[in-house]
Image (cartoon, rainbow, N blue to C red; front, side, top):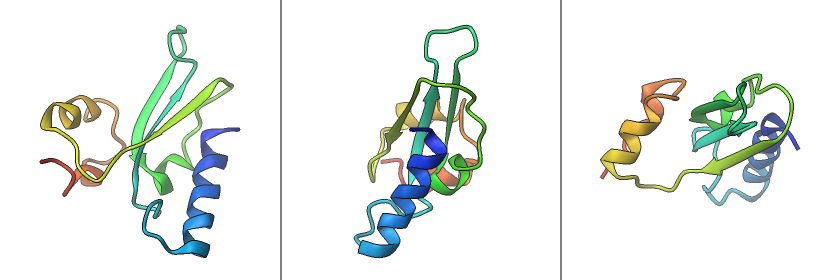
Length: 91
C-alpha cells in the first residue's frame, strides 16, 4: 500500500468513526526505500502526505502521538512539509 492510500483510508475511517485519532491534521512521517540512495522521508499531516510523491515501494508510515519531545521535533523539522504541523505537540 502506498503512503497516499494509507492517508486517504485513515482519514476516511476517521470521518466515519469520529474518534479523533486520524484527523486530516494528524502528524505522520512517510518513509520510502529507507537506506537506498533514493530514500524519501517526509513529515507532515495526513492531508499533506497524501499529496506527496514518494515514488516506488517499499513504503512505511509512522503516526506521531499527541506529544513529542523537543529533540524529536528538532529532528522532524528537517523533513517537515510545514512547521505548523508541529504546533501543540512539543512538551
